[in-house]
Every structure is written in structure tokens, then in C-alpha cells.
Amino acid sequence: MIPSPRRHRLAAAASLVLLACAVHAQTSDPAAPNSPAPIIERNAPPRPAVRPRVTAPKPASEPAAQPSALTADLFYEILMGEMTARSGDPGSGYALVLDAARRLRDGKLFQRAVEIALQSRSGDAALAAARAWQEALPTSRDARRIELQILIALNRIGETVEPLRAEVAATSQIERPLLMAVIARNYSRASDKKLAASVVERALVDELKSPTTGGLAWATVGRLRLNAGDNSGALEAARKGQEVDPASDAPPALALELIDPSQPLAEPIVTRYLASNTKATPDLRIAYARVLVENRRYNDAQTQLQALTTARPELAEPWLLLGSLQMQAKQDGAAETSLKRYIDLSSSQSNKDADAADRKRGVTQAYLALSQLAERRKDLTGAERWLSRIDSTEDLTIAQTRRAGLLARQGKLPQAREIIRALPERTADDKKQKFLAEVQLLRDAKQYQAAYDMLAQASAAAPDDGDLVYDQAMVAEKLNRLDDMERLLRRLIQLKPESQNAYNALGYSFADRKIRLDEARTLIQKAVQLAPEDPFIADSLGWVEFRLGNTAEAIRILEAAYKTRPDPEIGAHFGEVLWSIGQKDRAVTIWKEALLSDAENETLQETLKRLRVKP
Image 1 (cartoon, one colour):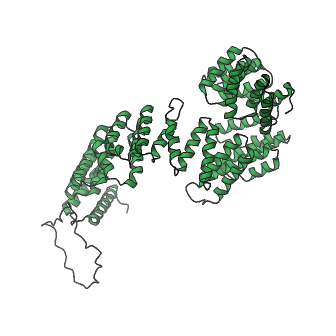
Image 2 (cartoon, one colour):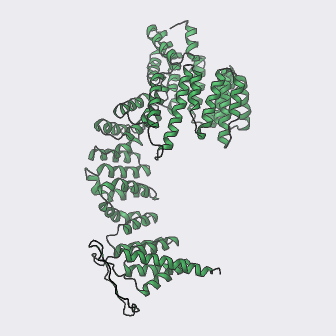
């Protein structure tokens, strides 16, 4: 026989009630302070006689079983409450369960009343149940936490000061970091974010003054200020937190998120912490290095990573970051050593922990970098050997693209293009990346017309794709179709007014041809405004200043750019400016460095040929 739906509901409700009763019976402690005394109903049915039997004595440590305060009437009330709530009348069910919870002073039943109210989307009723729970069981942290969550959800932020203060006071020191993270996450969801930051600051008033908790507390306030768009207030919180507790890593971690040319006081908070704490957490220094890379301060980032790998050589991640920066700076020998060190350290760690997937991605990145280093020294067999070690399906496209590049360098362009075309196209982005990879093969093989035709066809199908427009302009320049290049770059500026590459490329083209130099400088200065830390844009500005006859200013700009990024093209320009004022020995030294970095660089080779110099 198939039971009726009503019987299903009755059985489910009864199961829930029995579960609540079991929990209540196990957790009730009549001997505990403020706990209710056992209630024995006069009208309870008599217990059946039980034949006495001899049992082994219980250990002294085992507590005696305690009678439950649950009566038949209360059991029935809870059962009816569950059935009523499930049958479409949550209000009545809520009232019955809450009444039983009050009479039994049972936390599980109070929690169930809150759940019923929330399921019926009655925030006020849920809050009333949570507060009744607090009143019945004043020491219950669960009741206080639920009250806080409901108040925040109802956007009654101003009422959370006292319960939040009580919750913080009840939390042990070892649990404070987790609590502060929860506070920042929960209050960040408030609609009035400035009020949320203010309320948390008032609730943490005692913690903000403490040398033990001040750094963490101020950082929590600062994160909420940052969430409210108050960057200067967040910075002030980080500064105060460091003053109260210089050893805390929370204020500098907050300051890391504020590092920006418009906030010059943020970075000193980080550097002070790193300089004064010999046991500074490696994660913070790594994060600082990443921020420096994002701001194109590669030398500073490399300095931080070298300090970390010296102090903690057993850590894997810094070696990968350091190797990537050394490779970018054309320090190929050092880069290879760092990358191999990362692979060795990663291989020695367990593949079962939570970081295993990240390490696998890192090892793939290291293999790709080592392959590129081998290719730079024309060891194509070695380059292929590193690529063959990549077994991740997620990185198939990258590995196959690199293999295609190796084949193209060996004069096997048709086979290289077939490898690219055979790659899977799971998404529209996959299709675009395949297309751009094939275009790059043609550009590297100096088949510029074929590349231009492919880009023109694709751009006609997607006229608003700025990447296609820019690439087509760069290939037009290689074909000496300079009018087309200018037209395309001006179109890109219309499509993307914030594209620093478009302004830079057009301005540099004018400067290199010694035409429209004032306009060239204006265009490049716009690019500098959009990307003030980019050394290649600085190189363009130095070059146009040289063309305008401002040699001293050109040297100042180019020297700084070359120091930041010793790229062969920047070196070619810097050396030529020095050569022009008679500093030929210094120019030759720079050109020799550039040749060691990339002897095939077109700008460098053209400069040396035009000036008839053989360094």
C-alpha cells in the first residue's frame, strides 16, 4: 500500500519532533545553573512495573541519566507546530514551536522557530525568536550570533553595537582573527556601508586600544571603510593599527590594497612592517611583490623575492615568481636556476593537499618558461623536451601553441599552422585565441601580407574588436602602409579612448619618422597619463623629446626607463641619444648589454647598422 501524502508529512513531523526530544533529553542538565528543574506531570500515565535486575555498577565518571522536561502536552504542541508550519500556515506553526521553546528553554527549538520564521520570510518574527532565545538562555552564543545575522539582514545595523561587543568579548584571542574576518564579510553586505563601518568601530572600541588586538581591529574597521569607498579613512585605519600593534600583519595587508600613486602613504606601512619584523609572514611579502609587478615595478618586486628566497629557501612559490621576473629581465641563467628550484620543491611536496592543483599549474608555467629560455638560446630540441613534460589538458592550447612556434622557427610553417587549427574550440574565446596565435605565426615568419589579410577579414566581421584593430595596425606598419596604420589607430582611439597602446603607437610612429612631433608628444603624454609606470611608453616619450632637440630631458627619461626595464629596444634608443652627445663608450656598453639580451631585436640592429657601430 502506498501511504498518503498526509501520512508522509505526519511521519516526517514526528521524526523531527522525536529528534528534538532526543537532543533535549541528552543535553538537559538540571544541575546546571539556570536550568529548569525536571517537571513531573500529575496526569502522566504510570510507568509499567519493571522486574528488578542486578547490573554492574556504573563508573563514577558516568553521569546518571536525567529525566526530560518534555511532557506529552509539549510533545503534542511541537508536533502540531511542525505539521502546521509544513501544511502552509508557518505563522501558527512558528507560534507553537516558539511557545514550546520558551517553556522548555531549549536552544534547538528556539533555532527551529527562527528557521520557520525565515522560511516564511518574516524577519521580524525571526528576530523576536532570537531575542526570546537570548532572554531564556542569556549565555547562548548561538542565540547572539543569529540575532546579529538577522539584524544585519534586516539592515538594522545601528542595533548591533551591543550584541557585537558582547560576541567579541566572549571570543578567545586565538579565535579573534576568524571572528574579525566574519565581521568584515557580514557587515560589508549592509546597504548603508558607511554606517556599517561606524557601528563596527563603536563595537570594537576596547579592542582598538589594545596592543594585543588593536592591529587586527583597526584593519577590520579599515576594510569596511574601504568597502564604503572611503580610501583615505581605510588608510588612516591601517596607520592607527600599525601604531597600536607594529607586529600585526593585518594593517600592512590592508595597506597593500591601497597602494596607488594617489595614496603615497600606503606603501610605507608595508615596508615598515617588513623591515621591522624578521618573522614577517612570507605570504605578505609575496603579495607585496605581486602588487609591485602589477604597478610595473619589476626591479623592486625582484628585490623582495630575492630577500624571501634567501631567508626562506624552502618555500616554492617565491622561486616561480622570481624566475618569471628574471626571465622578463632577460637574466636567463638566473631564471633557469630559479624555475628548476621551484620544480624540485613542488615535486617533493604532497600531491594530496589543498594546494596541489595550484602547484600543478605553477609547474606547467615553469615548464613553459624553461622551454622559452631554451628557445632563446636556439636549443629547439631542449625547448620541445620541456613542453613534452606538460600533461595538463587545461594547458593543452598553450603547449601546442608553443610547439607550433618551434616548428615555424624551423621553417615548417604549414605544419605549425595545422597544429593551431587542430586545437579545440570550446568557447568563442578559444576560437579567437587560435586565430591570434596563427596570425602571430605569420608575423614571426615575416609573412606580413598574409597576416594583414587574415586580420582585415576578421575585423570586418567584428568591427568593434579593439584587439583586432590594434594588431592590424601593427602589421600595416610592417608593410609600410603608414596611412592605413594611422587610420586604424585613430579608429581604435574612438573605440577605446582609454587605450594607452593606441596613443603610444601612433605618437611613436610620428616621432620615429620625425614628423608632426608636437602632436606625437601630445599623444604619448596621453599614454603616459593612462599608464604612468609603463617603461615602454616612457621610452616613446624620451624618443620624441630627443627628436624635438630636448636631449637632456630625453636622457633623463630614457635612463629611468632602461633602469626599470633593460629591454633591447629601450637600450637602442638610450644608446643613440648618448652617442649623439659624444658619450660613445657608455653608448657601446649599453648596446653590448642589449645584444646579450636579444641580439636579433630589429630596432637595435637597425640602430647599429645606421650608425655603423659594431659593439
